[in-house]
Length: 462
Picture 1: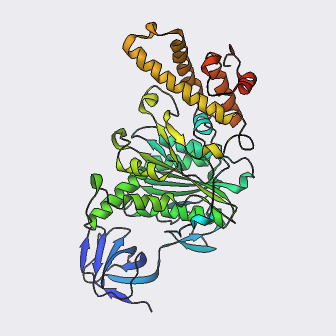
Picture 2: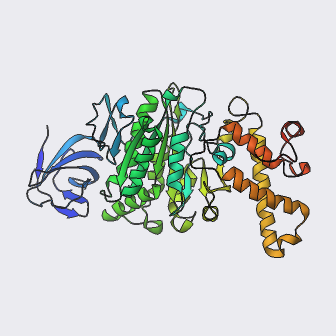
Picture 3: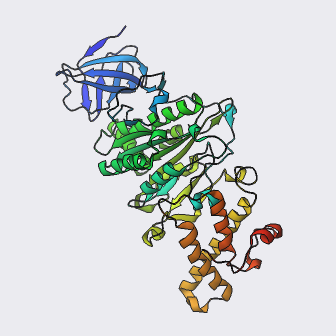
């Protein structure tokens, strides 16, 4: 039986408080009808006996203490799901905003998801080709992995997100089995329009599900956006058998919304004002990536977050690094020198790539080449540090070769066009051409058989 509760006890920011409520449940959805007949939605976020605190998605402006009617729906917030969600654009709460009408649901699912039994998880192995040399060769994105991108304010992470969404491919199954779920949180109107226009003009919009939470949307809606996106991804992966890449930007905006929400509830703040449960809250999102035994699909996550003041020890990147399987770090110095994408090689890694590359996946020489490129670039940084002290002209001939290798590596391998889509073979071959500019005896991470096959001293880049 549905009961309407008349009036509210208290209004605090985006929260309303009701007394003498019976039978309510945590995360239960409520309808809130105002004096003028306007209908808003909310959810139960706190209960103390018969006192219930409700979070209003659209904000509490105009809500009356006396005449507001609140109806408890008896279920958590759910998302309407159907194969037709592909190619559609939704707001942060999962409502269509593309003018194509509502979704006729084939199923409805709780946006909070259900935990994956660890015993049922399948270890991720096959890779996703992004067409970007640094990612594919040195920090390979594995299907079912969660691999965040650590960026900074004003850097080109939005362009990188669009390029990955446009170019990402899987090799062993048809393209009809691969799709993108794209979630933008706190995006400015021009950025949201850039995302939508880029996908439309490149022809990939029909395999993308977009969730857009704008900067002028209610901040509370931002907390729902990644959950709606992941619910759509889980449906497409585990019910429709698709391989889904979920790109979420910007997770820092999400965390700041969570901080504001926590503060409005009067919770004791933790580090930098974020709630003490930030770790478990982020884990509840990131751990929804993976593959499940008996299901042919997969959910791969590529969350993007901006580090305030480029501080990797900030709570959001710090906790994200604990939960996820590696990171791709963008470098402001490379960005300032005009290199795109400005991927910082040495602090970036993919912890799962060792089992998803090599013969049968990419190419037999991939692992050795990757190790050698990392080692050689580390020596480049050592040579640059030494040159800053004693001057480049005082370096040994070998160190000078490393400096030249570093310049060529950044200009030819790290840097590529925003519309340049390199195959894994092209990226590996380019890596060997650059290593061939170094003395053979310096390539100590590669065995002689591979060197005999791929090392070509004196070969110039076309």
